[in-house]
Amino acid sequence: MSRAPTPPPAFSVAPVPIWRLLWLWVPMAGAMAVVTVTTLQSSQRSPLELGYTLPFVLLVTGVLTWAFFRRRISLEGDDLVVVSTFYRRRVPVALLQLDKARIVDLAEHHEFKPSHKINGYAMPGFQSGHYRLGGRKAFCLITDASRMLYLPLRDDSVLLLSPEQPRALLEALQALAVPARAH
Image 1 (cartoon, rainbow, N blue to C red):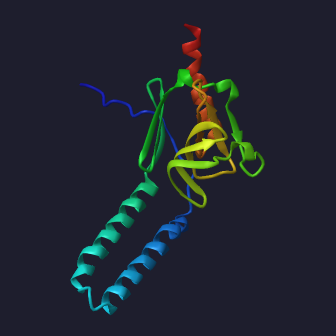
Image 2: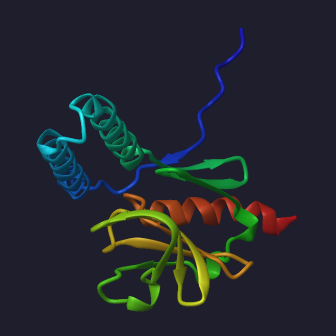
Image 3: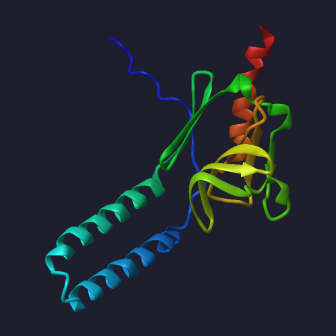
């Protein structure tokens, strides 16, 4: 009798209040209202165009809402895997500079705050994807800026993560890195 494979250790991501989605839903609802009013008032447009436009806007809103909830932090073998919205980052634990890792509060440590979005998904209180941190590349999954895990890599890039329990993730990474150092 074979045993089911054990799932990789997962670390809960700090929750984001659901009302943050209003930053997405309100503008999209406004766009649908404007499209509807201008289409119905225009003599050059037919109401049939609404049959194409409104479902498309609803589909985009649905995909962006789904992406908002797609976030996961796990350890798979010797890799840290971060899945966030449309992005995925797999980093071997050996590439992490765990001696320089810190748990930070962005309100107190502005130097760890991502400065420019390169390719990401963001709304107030939520950042996901690729950013710049000063001159360094940063991959972010930030849902709680008050207790964020700063993980520098050997290639001079950075991971900025918001696990629900940042200390537990850091300790798991350190425990995984110890056997690698012993060899």
